[in-house]
Length: 347
Ligand SMILES: [Fe+2]
Figure 1: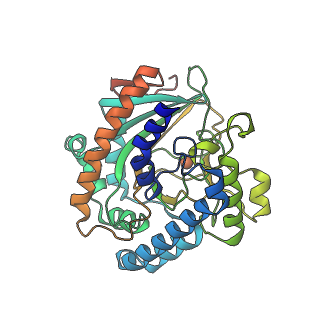
Figure 2 (figure 1 turned 120 degrees about the horizontal axis):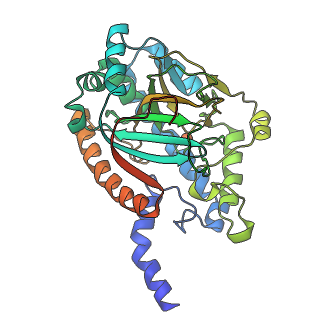
Figure 3 (figure 1 turned 120 degrees about the vertical axis):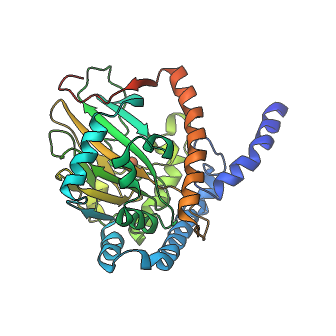
């Protein structure tokens, strides 16, 4: 009993820090996951505050992007641009990534083999087309604005191998969900064309907006997520990525949209909006340049030195990834290898 109390006291600073930053786990953080605090509105206060600060930062960063893009992002929760790069530049980039040889992380989601490479400045030094994309001014400004943090994102290349010859595991990507409790963005430049064969991204336009119905839903979910043991609903409630059922979406008046898009399409989406990965009908591939720009939602400020801050975030995230790698490699959840992305028919 005394040991348990001492352990809790030692962890208290970390839990409090998580509370005022991006911490979202109802399982690992007993303050975030406290039923009575959430009954009194802890979760909804975090949700509302994060939204207000997000909109405040967006207002200040408005000059970065054209009014049309801002309107689309605020109205729908995403910006979609077909033919984003000039065709010759896109062809060069696609070729470069398809023959890329280097460090690849690999793990299984459902029957999908997901391969990812963290495209740091160092990795990009040998990939001129990837580096040119990372420095593309329209992309940089869009990501700086949409993230509301005025810094470039972290870049990855992701290659999904659908219906791979693997032992199936649970697939958290197929259920309709919001990534977390606050607005944050991810971006994809599609290297492969996407349709039902290789599993399109599905997003619910407008579901990123915080209306009264969403707030009531958040409140109910936060109480559900606090349940323990056998009372806890199955799935990922406990980690703060709340799932939503088809019936609840209809009740809220939403209609999901499937992104069947040609290669060279850019999508930047607010993943507080509901989304999921669509089913792939065939053994197939889907390669994207994948971008992520998560940050502390409660910091009202943004950086005035975008590129320098971007490098710091990249360095810090690189260290965090190394730690995660060690754990996932040890548990067998992940494999790392040096080589190419799987692009043949049989994977
Ligand atoms: Fe997600």
